[in-house]
Amino acid sequence: MENSAIIVRVATPDDIHYSVTITDEMEASAKARGTGIAKRSPEYIEQKMKEGKSVIAHTDAGDWVGFCYIETWSHGEYVANSGLIVSPAYRKSGVAKRIKENIFALSRKLYPSAKIFGLTTGLAVMKINSDLGYEPVTYSELTQDEAFWAGCKSCVNYDILMSKERKNCFCTAMLYDPKDHYQPEETAEDFKQHSKGYERLLRLKKSRFLKAFRKITGADSKTGGGGGQVKKRFFSFFHF
Image 1 (cartoon, helix red, strand yellow):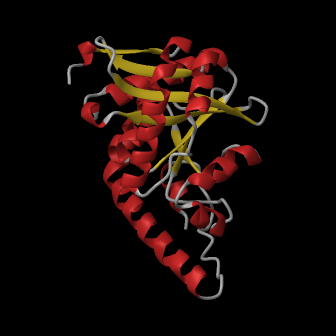
Image 2: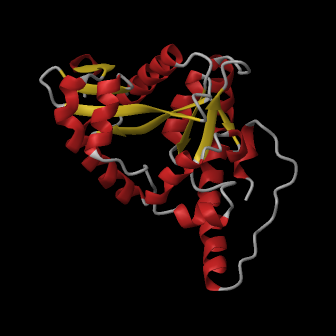
Image 3: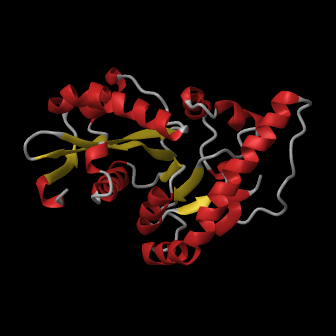
């Protein structure tokens, strides 16, 4: 698809007619991947549109293309760019990156002091985040707001998350800290250098979590190994 035919902008109340399409695609995408986007109702999406806390993409003919929204946690200390979804017909067109760039800019405008974070199972989203200045981090560096973690209950992997005491799961945590961050050029270069390693480790992570979870549910609940001294950068999020 041609990017020139796609409009990416802040959503408004005039866009609420897209809400059911968006939530249906979120659910279908999560099922297809076997991983979770926290399940949201059309009413929730509509509220984000009314508040000016979401970004939508559509063609100039009005066909829905993609969406993402902002959530705040820990009294505004943390911001999540959540629910990134693109219509199957427009994937691999570059629109996901445009949506992420717009929702990141909107988050910085609305919450300039907040730490911006995201959870993803996809290497492509990791690359987009790295281009924006995000770094991979451990789950302990994310918000500990109970309401945020409650949103994971609709994910098919929630039991695995809880079996790891919310210290790790299939998703990779990434964070942008406005007070302490590398330049986007640096994080993008880091990702480029380590992308093959990230890809292999994501596959290993999924395999090991599944094996560990089967042991926990099939026998006694041994909590596997601590992973040693946690480092902030690079492979810190792959401790099992």
